[in-house]
Figure (tube, rainbow, N blue to C red):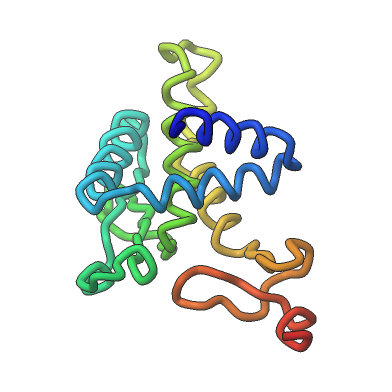
Length: 174
């Protein structure tokens, strides 16, 4: 019975437009994520980005924003800070704050990319050298391009602490 429901759910998701299916999958994943798994993913991203950035001038550091995970409703309020650090000077060059949903998207992007990439060769060295900037750009894209979760069309004018975002048109209708 349970497997049949799971199969029907997966079939329904597969028939959705790609953007909606991705959103549904992320919501499902965040719903089943435990706090320990979340912390493990933060550590894993630090390990993956450090490995890719070895021998490079810059690297990314992920950490849970202090106090943002102290509630029973941590999934709603937790924030992950990603800081781009110049290794030679120790100076933080850029920093972005992500909610859980954005963090899960980035986690999937980075782990998928790092697992599919082969051992670096001469042709990929230029890609690796700018990987930190590329990932920081992806974080900026995730945090800047919020869209309305009702119409999924308008740019978000209001983002609630639970990470739901709404455009003014939908807010006015409501």
